[in-house]
Length: 193
Image 1 (tube, rainbow, N blue to C red):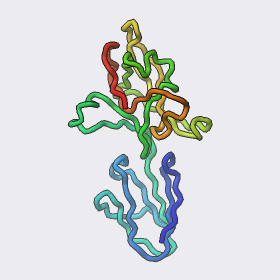
Image 2: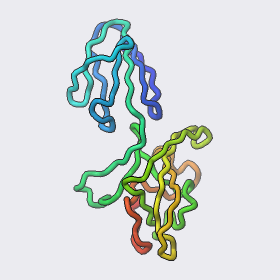
Image 3: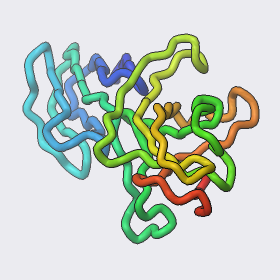
Image 4: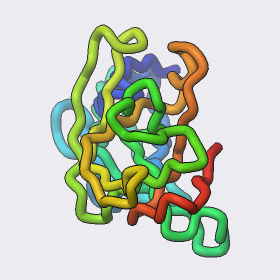
């Protein structure tokens, strides 16, 4: 028997209390780089074997297991065989996938229309902020975005992304999970989801 407390999906720390001696398997998600997960038993860093994506460790009755995953904004790329999103990027934070919703990006002309052509460069800094009054309290991701205005001039604006699960909670609002890494000319079509 185990009891667990967790800060997921916005916090990377979880605590597991074990009743009875057992072998515990803790999933190490794909978004965590190898070696970045920290697992402690009784306050000490624990040695474990990694089997098929799971940390496997022996624990004893009453042990408190602490698991810590790094929580940072990240870029997500599809498999190269998915040509529909070639040259595009999505954003994530911990286990969550994010989207850009027009409600948060009104400064970008044409957002949600056939004229939309925003790009988030591969080297654009991703910053996070907890917004308690937004959608019941969420962490948002902001990035500098580039786009062509209706006159064909390259412009820059700050773009905000919200967790995908929270989209469409403030009225009808076009949103994009994948956006280009480079802005496209105004006559190109966006790839919306």
